[in-house]
Length: 96
Image 1: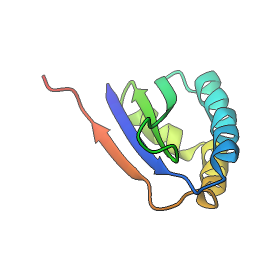
Image 2: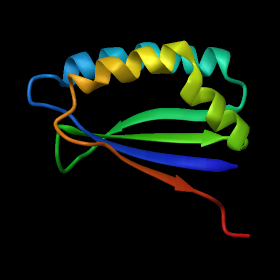
Image 3: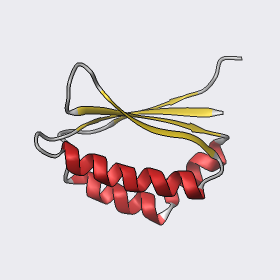
Image 4: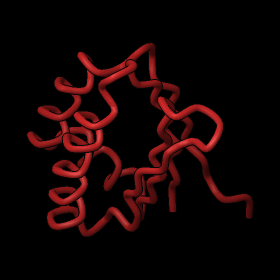
């Protein structure tokens, strides 16, 4: 199992648009990617313009597949105009 924590700073006034784009993406991810076990958008309680996406994948293959889907690539392009800075992506592996 792999977990991803993606932190995304969003521009002032763009959070509603970001949430809409993400909701459309999440619906497609969860409907079409059996290797994706969790794909959840969370909003910071400290900074209203900071979002964190929490993702869980069965394996590296499922994660690779996710990043190559047309709907992810389309959403990623839309996110570019909404971000206030570079996202931080962290890949986590369980300690055995």
